[in-house]
Image (cartoon, rainbow, N blue to C red; front, side, top):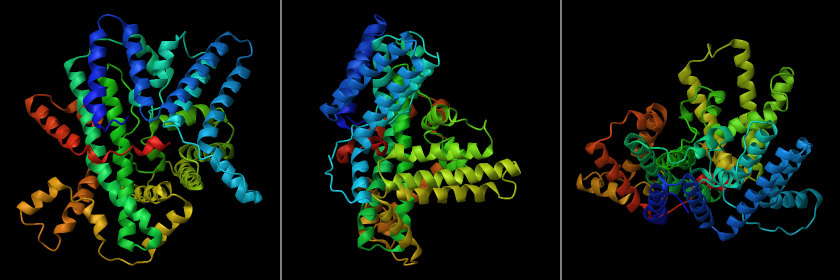
Length: 485
């Protein structure tokens, strides 16, 4: 089930809120059971076979948790639990990639299994690995099965994060049903609607043009179209992931649960280290806590530190997808991260480069790396970048600019007679570009806006209109980009 779907907005969410608030003052355990059951429905709606995989993962990991608590061979049990989780992830996400590369390397002809990737398996697998390691370190208290099942399956963050930890969720689950103020609920509803608008009205609009350009790149597009496709995907991914994070925080907030911030205006970053403090914050935290520090962090000398950072970014690329293009993306980020870390350690600051220049450089680098992230393979990503460098700049084809001529906006242009001008077909596209770039570079993030917003009749009317606009635009429902990871 998608947040941006009729069944979620008109049926699932009202049922969750009604059942939760009916039980809230009566039984905390009943509230948790209802949330677990609704979360299982939410996940199983995508594909019933996904549900059995997740249930198996929950039950087996809870058994490992109990085993670690009671065993005198805790390290061995933890290792076995991690191997089980990574084995499950490898089979569903990387097995075909492994077979394909073995066939190419050793000239074999082993058949691919074409395994359907369960949505969000990387997220709930890493979350459970984190729980097991925290248990091994003695950082968890006694947890019953219902609390654990809710920790893993909680629907606002189930399939695309954030990757939450025991210490930030379990205390809240034990106090579930606490009084939620009108301000908290209004702020949470604000976050959900803003996130929905980012996804439905902005990210999906950019996505239409992006899909056309990446599908057509090998058949011939001009440099303008290639350059815009790279920019559009950079903005699409920003608003898509930002929208999901906002909606997840909003949905959890309506139930009195505070999720950690996972997205903090990353295109405002002054360098790549700053970018990774703002983009997918909880994934970065997981890798630093469970990979970088256990490998030695910065405690074993500079060379070892740089090697550890390279390992983290290589694994980050692999985590994002089973393809050499994802690995290249991780290596690119890792290389610039290490170079930036080296420069900062020897200069102390970016004193030779203005912040504006540094921000532009970081944005351009991230956009180039995203090209390989979006492309189905390295060759296609390279072709997209090569097309930009051909200097074949002409007007874009109609499929690209028509993606932005939304019916409601095009009607306004007709009323104002702008549609009939020579630039008429391009006005909406230019508007999207300018507004989006201003938003990602200058606007405060949604969390800050939700706190500052004064909720009353005027703001309620604006949010209601925005929600209606989003709902009537749901005919072209699309999954969130991070669902694929």
